[in-house]
Image (cartoon, chains in turn brown, orange):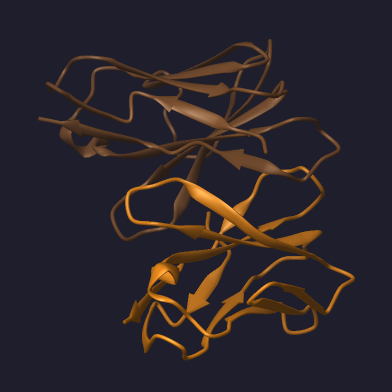
Length: 116
Length: 111
């Protein structure tokens, strides 16, 4: 089956620093990748949708200057949390879709971000 | 925004019993999917049911969809301790579009 990886699986950073999270599709080309955020005991909230080679589309209320998304290749998307604050501490999950005609999204294992 | 609501929010049962979780949504959908999430992990796709389907089975899973009531249910039969996880429904308005997740049900299966 299709595999999506995320790196790192967890990260602790100091307030004010930036953190980059990678999402890779390992055995397929992902034309579209999605970034979600999940707070403890809550559901997934879509942050943004990124298509390879174009700018990401952000959901309402998500600051695009704070959460920088780059989808430079068909197998890699990155999410950079800039000037992180403790309230950015969350579980970040990416998913990838192979093509526009398919419904299937394959989810990564998630990245636990803790900002101190 | 989340359009799905799930109930119950938490369910605790004994091994061997059946578990039923419900999901309601607000807008028209193309597909409805169910996912499982173990604590601190990513999502695992369980089953998809299309808007023109009413029931679907996969192993110990049975999903129903009632588009007139905008609701779906997930039944896990003969539950096992390993089924302990959070279960989410997710809908998409058109095939391949963004998924909207429900609030989730935390299932605990006691051995």
